[in-house]
Amino acid sequence: MTLKPKTILENGDGLFDTHVTVEDLEEVIQDQMKTNSKLGKSTKYTVIGEGNGIMSRVILVEPQWTISDDHLPSKFVLKIPYCVHIQGLIGQMLAMNPMSEEQEAGLWAMWESEIQSIHNREVNINKIVEKWDKREDLLNPRVYFSKKYDSENRNKGFIGMEYAEDSIVRHLYVNVKPRELYPVLKFVAHFQASGLHLTDEEKQSISGFDIEKIAGPLMTEDGIKGILQQVRMMNPAKFDEKVKKIEAFGMEIVNFELASNLNKYVGIDQPVLAHGDLWATNVLWKEKKEEWIVSKIIDYQGIHMGNPAEDLVRLFVSTLSGPDRQKYWEELLEKFYNFFLEALQSQKAPYSLEQLKESYRCYFVFGGVGLVQLFGPVTQRKLTMCSPDENVEEYQKVVLGKMEHLLDDVEKFHLHSRNVTKSYKKPVTRI
Image 1 (cartoon, helix red, strand yellow):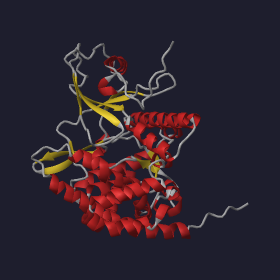
Image 2 (cartoon, rainbow, N blue to C red; image 1 turned 90 degrees about the horizontal axis):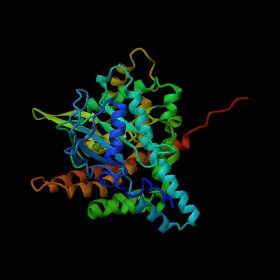
Image 3 (cartoon, one colour; image 1 turned 60 degrees about the horizontal axis):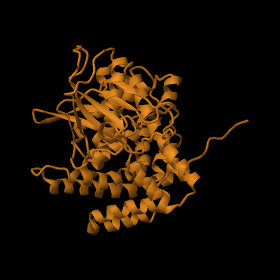
C-alpha cells in the first residue's frame, strides 16, 4: 500500500517540521551551484525571523562544506513555505460554513495550489531580477539556488539566498523617520521602471496573484467584525468611537473590485511591477554610526503587476508614525516619483504624479484594513518574544499611535474612494 504524501499544509519530517531534508538541499546545491560539496555533520541550522510573518520557515544555515569551493557561501538563508496555520484558518471557515467532504477537499486543494503558486512566482521573479542591469539600485538579496513545486514535487519547495549579516527588522512597534525611507522609495522606483521591460513570457511567469482569493476568506463580514473587535480591545476607551464609525460602513470597506482594478479607476493604462507585501518586516536595516541604513528588501511572494501605490501604502502605514505619515505622505510620494522619473531616463512615465496620489487615497482603505491584523496578533506575538531589557511598554504605545491614525484615515479615505467609484464612468465601446 502506497501512503499518500503529506501536503505543505501539514507538518513534515524534514528541517524544523517542513518537508525539506538536508538531502533535498544537497541535490539542488550540487546541481545549481556546480559543486560536489555536501553539508557536513557540523552544519548549523537556526530558525530566524520568528514572529515576523506566517508563510515561511526562515532558517540561517552555517555550512560545514565537505569540499572547499571559493564560490560557496559561509552562511546562507533558507526559506521554506510553511503554512500549517492554514489548518486553523480552514477550521474557522468550516465552522462558519459547513461543507460536504467533496467541497472541503476542494478547499484544501485550492490552498495547497495557491501556496505552491506563490512560492513559484517568487522563484521566477528572483531569476528575472538577476538578469537586470543596474543591480546596485536594487536591494534584493542574491539567490544561490531554488526549487519550485510541480506535478511531481508537491511539498519540497525552497529558496537559498544571501544572508544579510548584522541586519535587523524594525517591526511595527518602531517608528521609522520619513527620510530613512528614501532608499526604499528609490528601490521601488527602479523596481517599477525595470518591470516595464518584462517580456510576455516573464509577465506570465509571475501572473496569477489574486488578492480576493488570498484575503477573501479572512475579509468576510464575520472576519471584518472580528478584526475590528480586536482593534477595539487594544484600547476600548480610545478606539471604540473610531471603530464604530468604520463598522457603520459595513462591507463597503472591503472593496475587492477597487483594489484589484484600481488602475482603471484612476486612468492608468499600464500596470507596474508590485512587490505585493512591502511592510515593515520585509525591510532589513543596518545601524551605522547611530544611523539606520536600509540593507535589503525581502519576501517577493506577493509579486504581481498592479498599481504603483500598493507597495507605498503598506510601507508608510507599517513604518511611519501616524503623525509623520499624515504629514509627509504627499511629500514622500513626490520624492518617489522623482526617483521613478530618474529610473525611467528618457522613457515616458506610465502614470502621472496626480494619478499616483489618487491611487494612494483609493488604495489606502483596503491596504490599511489588510494591515490591521498585523498590528494585532502578529505584533502581540512578537512582543512576547522581546528581551527583558527592551521597553515593551513604549513599543505598545507606538503600535497604538499608528493604529489611532490609521483608523482616522480609513474613515477619511473611504469616503473619498466611495465617491471615486460612484463617479466612475465606464469607457464607451464604439462599434
